View: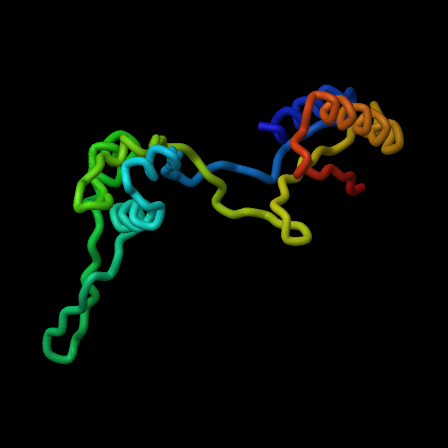
Length: 171
């Protein structure tokens, strides 16, 4: 969200062309927003919830099968048709809670499908999203572009950027 806002501010600078981000959310992802207090009240541990969801989506090796000289792994996971609709269906599944009770996933977590990056760029071990652009040398000089870029960044900072975010220029 912040990177897109900064990119739109940079694109407003006259003479800046081809503005783009290094971030592309292209991979489907299941987002799990756990109500930790509710889960604790119902006796569902985070470990149990995460392992159950991981098994449903990614699978867990539960056994090995040997046929002559060949050995095969047996993996437990949901069928493709159910994993494709994980956001809408998994809330109806149950997870074990303390005391041998079963609790519906939707009672302790909100599941939504979204997109995630195919890869995460890092700089000094911190996540990085780069805003890149070119200059039309007939309309703007590098010095003017940097000055106007600084104005865009300052406006971005005034708008309220989280403290854990760092901004910098590379020419």
